[in-house]
Image 1 (cartoon, rainbow, N blue to C red):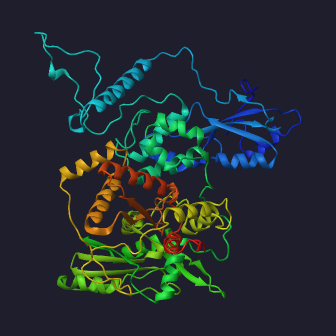
Image 2: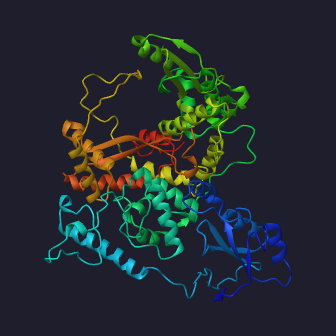
Length: 628
């Protein structure tokens, strides 16, 4: 065993200012292992800046340059050294490293990597051990009640008190009792080490709450499958560990999740800005699918996404036009045209912002004709090879009443893109109305960075070790023998050619039913969407669709935190098969659906067109393999 206790210590930003100086200090012949403390973690830079600006945390003290732990590892490996990252005992936004200039001796275990602060002789104003015991008591009490009471009888809040207040007559003094907080609140113990502290912070950020304890249930505090995806992404970025979404469902507390972290694989390649782009960046798999449809079917408005905003009050049209130009400059996907090389292979061409400056024509229209005018504008197809995939139009129905139409081709955006698009447009218009350009933090990545990263992540399908090969193999097995087409009791024959005409069927759930579905899902470790899919499968089964019910549904596809604020086409589609054979109870079927959904989450990166190929070819005789 190699003890690292008592190593020489260098403070980052004070005794060593960067990697070059560190290399010089550690490269001397007599140099041995050294501990470097207080290195700002580049992965947290934007979060720390935002939290400090909002007054959530104190302004970080000036230090050395922010550094990514993985880059530090690669730097050391290039010198034939090794660095061992560990937690900073003082600042959660920083990390420490132990530099081993000679590399690690094989077979020797390191001890004393993390050095706690200790702070002997400190005076405490509370009793932290007692606080932990109270948290554990509350958690244990809720668990005890959950085992014995139906959901509707569970108390809304559990509050620990030091003593029972009494009136002078010895009765319970209800007025002296603390007022319960009926909002979802943390009742779990406080973190016991830096790893649990970081996980508590990540849980709280994703859930949008002030505090999370290590025993708090992620889903009981408002989590769902989409938030679980974001949590996994945050864990990947912060800890460099690949945690499957299934782990969050199976162990939804920090205490449970820590056990999965110990077994987690190294994180997949990190999404980051590409410094040297190829001359012709490839399309993403999703983009290529729409490009092929467009080439095969010709110009069409099938994949036009209209984004309509009602603007009431005085409007500065020039400021609005400048704001639309600002969002084009901010999001490269909105000023990208699709080119083709001499062999017909498509590629992305990102136009400079000054070449993609849009116009916002103003059209006067009476209110009664507005719907028709919007529909006509939204039906105009795009020529993706010659024009950017965004078109704007302003319809004036009154002196201070306008309707803005932003028409986006699906190849450049999806449903999840509308929120950042609206936020950025509002910020840009507010700034331009005041005669200034918007001030916003630069996006960490652009869509081209994502497409290049997607290729690196998935790899070559012909490589058995690649992610794409393994995920396609899963879907090939999962979709084998799937009924095609599903026998639905339609009121008219299936057309031989798709007409691309559809509509919405809207209905509502009353609040009591929504609450009941939520309780049912929670009781079985599932989500509301899983419970509703189970109900839909039962309905179709009862209508004569059989025992094998495959349902396609979209999945956001934004598996990295840096994609959250980006406009682009990330959504994917997966197929979930509900097996109703053997006359299962609803609870048994819900468990089957849950298992299928969690397995699908682990294989969600496979492009939808590969799923289609697998489903079509799996319906043929077994001699036909599902391959490209």
